Image (cartoon, rainbow, N blue to C red):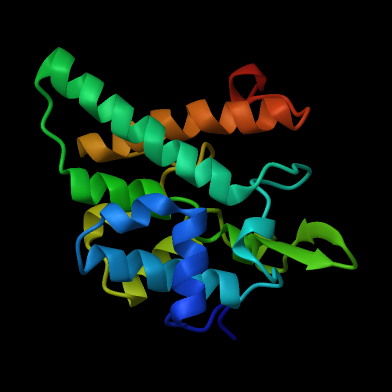
Length: 193
């Protein structure tokens, strides 16, 4: 049995998505539809009543949507800096889609049971990022988006070849460390792998 059921957003879901992830409004079609459907699918297939209730990680109270929005803003800033410093040309639409989709599988990785957040059944079976990429492939996302989402986690083999993948990596780590730090957890830069 699949962990999710493809779900298209209605008006209420679109409104909640835009409130939680306002940068979705900056995407052109069909990327906006991809992001809308992907997030609605994982959220509505999860045990979380509201998207804003999904935590960034187990043991954290930091909201996932806040982290994703911060990653989007950090990635946009990094992109502008890379262009100014090095003349790096970035596909901004692809970058924004990647930034907004990188953690799309997390609603499926954490369950809400009796008021507690616990690892879902799929959490231990499929590495973070891979489930999101499987969903995105089913929705018709291009390979560069699939590659970025499926390999962005710190324990994944990072094989980025596009500037957007590198920008995601650094924006995500920067924002993840803040989310961990504010949750009283050790940030990635302080962990030994």
